[in-house]
Image (cartoon, rainbow, N blue to C red; front, side, top):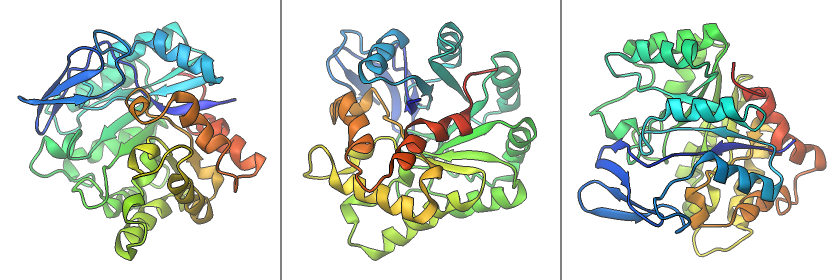
Length: 311
């Protein structure tokens, strides 16, 4: 079974970041703040949307059986939208709920997302440009004010998926994750984007040490790492992205193939590669992977972590 462990759907982009609101324009563009316009996805649709029906067509094109639908502040909260998609196509989609744990009503939102909508996954995006670290002056994952969240996630057997942003950002809180795991050893979590490998600084010892320290979190029995969006981090390099493959090799050596999940980060990564390329550069061009390694990374591990469907 092939599972894309990191995908997105949205009716319209309509989120909030530290540099302002985001909103869909047309033909793949998004307005970010007052004056910034970015090419967010190819000009696939006039209204810059990516509904579940379109994602399914991409999945069928490549032969992907299921996708995990993640959320974040940049896109805007879409709990009901993702819930509806996962309920309508329960054999194709696994949805992740979104909460901001620093909001006053965060516990009420959590109970709505988990108890009423039935999400088994909670996504927390901390990176500064698109996530919660940009919305607040100071955020710490080991903040006592959000201790309730880790307790609830652990008690209920849920999964928390973290996007901590790149090395050097205030969201890159490896030590805070270690403290959470020490206090809640039964917690299950996924770190996204291969922990932002320093591909452009691969010959610099210091960022490589910082990256390896976060990758080694997956030595913990309850921690996994997804491989989403690596082609966006390479420089002066085309498909099949050998530098990205090299960091996947390093991760396999550090924590084993049983701790890695393939993910695409579609649709924004379609500005860097086609969906077949996002699939094949791992499945076919990481030639250091055995057949067993590949089967684990491309689907088996995701089933183990995320399960087959929502509750």
